[in-house]
Amino acid sequence: GRPAQALMMLEDFPRVMALFEEEKARLPRFQEWCDKRALADFKKDDVKDCAPGTLGAALHDFMVNSGYELDIFYHEIQVVNDLTFYLRQTALTHDIEHIVSGFGPNHGGEVALLNANMHAKVRYFHPELANFFNRVATYLKAKTLMKDGLHYPEAMRLNLEAEFRGAEQGRNWKYPMMLADWRAMTDWQIADIREELGITPVPEEGLWADTNRLSNENDPDWGEPLLEAAE
Image 1: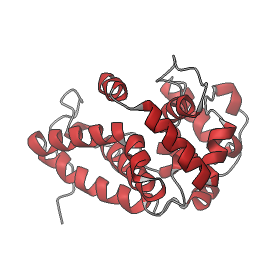
Image 2: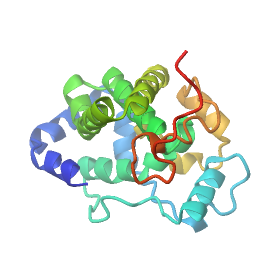
Image 3: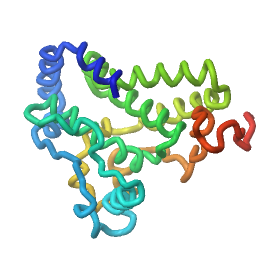
Image 4: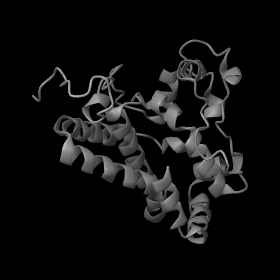
């Protein structure tokens, strides 16, 4: 969106690209990810024959049922270097990360996934490059915290739980999920991908599925409290 574009306009890109080079020299996995440039720009036909339980099958199901292909953002970016690959790839992989982390595309899941990513990146990368990777997430986290904390009490309670559970999982990741080669994993069972990447603990199926109504006044169930009370 516009805030993300505005933040990008403020970046010192020569410095960012220098940090890419420094970290590639230090981190072989990051070097390989940059060199391979395995874009996750999946189309439905790419994964239509994947077996049940695999990442490919989950992606096919997502694309068929949502009506979306994965490449919603940054269509205009041509991949010509490491930085443009990063921008294009991370726009493509958001929905894959929802599937693999188990944090669904809902209010709680978005907070948890964002927080998991932030923790994983600061534990892996040089602080300055991690901050660049987390820049838009920092804005989104602050915006959501202010919105929930000032206006939506039930959503704020959820926000704090989701923030904790995201941090708990993200600090167990073996490396940031952005560095996974999803093209090489389409035929893997999701359970095996989670084991490979250290995605644990995995939230229970359907967690927070009905939480958008806590902070979205356009939701048809807006204002209906969640059934559970705080313990």
